[in-house]
Image (cartoon, rainbow, N blue to C red):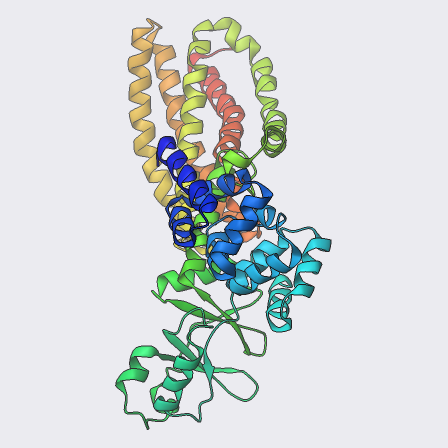
Amino acid sequence: MEASTIEQLEQELRRAIAGRRPEAVAEALRAIPGEELYRVLMSLSDNGLSVTFALLGAEGAAKVFERMDAAQAAEVLHRFSLAQAADILEEMAPDDAADVVEELDPLTAEGILVEMHQEEAQDIRELMGYRPDSAGGIMTPAYVAVSPNLTAGEVLRAVQRLAEEAETVYYVYVVDEADRLQGVLSLRDIVLKPRKTPVTEIMNRDVARVRADDDQELAARLLSERRLLAIPVVDAEDRLLGIITADDVADVLQEEATEDIERLGGSQPLEVPYMHAGVAQLVRKRVGWLLLLFVAGAYTSNVLAHFEGTLSQVVELAFFIPLLIGTGGNVGSQIVTTLVRAMAVGELGFPDVLRVIRKELVVGLFLGGVMAAATLIRAATLHVSLDVGLAVAVAALFIVLWSALVASILPLTLRRLRADPAVVSAPLITTLVDGTGLIIYFTIANLLLDVT
């Protein structure tokens, strides 16, 4: 959305607030993009923000807060009284409210929780007890569960009674007296079956589920692969704790994709949107990787020093150093990016490592042949001798194959070691291949050119 349009919406919002027009305020806020809401709300005076809350009411304000990043929502929430903040959080989905509370300082968070109704506060406390990146950390306790002793008609009445409180009513979960998950009912089956049909005859006993301590990516992948609208979360005793819905999964997939892309670029992921990240934060996220890559790449100069004699005898070899190390790094980056993405969506695992190596080496052989031919042409345009051109071409082939081998093994090996494969970023692969590629290059040159 263009800046002029956003400014116009902001002006409309201010006029609506000044005129005390609730519907106009709600309409203006709905029209403002989620990424701009934080800036617009923070630009309001304390009185303007207070009037906005009064006009929207707790329910309307909760819808606005749910559209913002949790860290941004927490910063805006700081400007409300504890009682107002409590009212807003009570109207939000429990999982979204827990995310916001976790971003508050402990004293403020506790003050708001004390102001909330005991049941809602307890739900948030329990959700905050799970790791943020676990299935329990993104689940919501707002679901519909029934006893297996009911009939379809009784379940339908329960759904009608609990619909407003539940995150979704498309699935109704069947639990025993100890809350252990027994099965699941779809709303369609409940509606279409005769009212006196026992639940045990309708429910599906083969229920996909995740443990509360499972990684959120597992839950996202299961829900996506099985095309579900929600997936139940259980504890070690199979007791139903909550559900994860499709909108939660969309947030997870976007967050994980963003983190992987940032890591592949050689930077630690940001916890806030880029436009809200300060200079100091950006420096902090990047400098560690740069120093690590600097240390890792320092041996490249040692390799050049070691082969100084070769370079002094065949100066033309220096012409091709940038070309060869660039080619090796690019090949490695292509493979790493492809494999990290394939692992993220569950297409690959460590047992596939040999198949991946075979495939990438075959691809590398073809690519290496193409690059060798291109190198020969480049050598001709530089008017170097044919034997030097052939040495560079052979080196290009082997460097491509070596880069393909390294890039095929490292991401899968790191996943096996329970490390994040995205850490094997493109810059790191490039750095590793630079030095080893030079060793391959000068070794081949020494052999083919008979350099002593």
